[in-house]
Figure 1 (cartoon, rainbow, N blue to C red):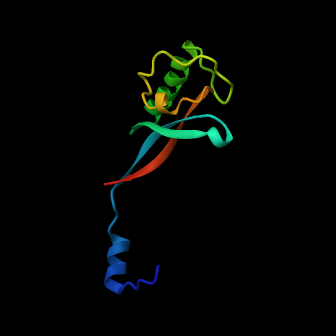
Figure 2 (cartoon, helix red, strand yellow; figure 1 turned 135 degrees about the horizontal axis):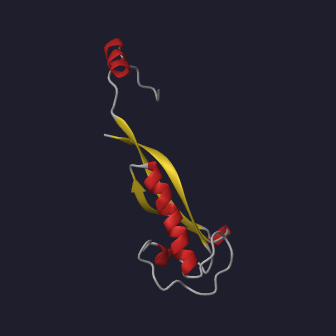
Length: 107
């Protein structure tokens, strides 16, 4: 353990003391390919179902604006970035994809 020796009391405390943990579901966006590929954090939810529904809403929102999903070329920049303001900074004239990643939150 990185050169640190734990005495018996510390080891016992670590085994008996449980840190309260919960899950968060982080939505990330991505666009571009190869050298132009970028990924960013959009938002996080504590409920997995809400996060998945939000991803569906993001895809539907962009499809309405003519932006394809994935790495297809997109000739027109979206007019409205309100559901994902960070995308305006990362726009690469390509489609956009969103996904959900589960992370552990430690209180």
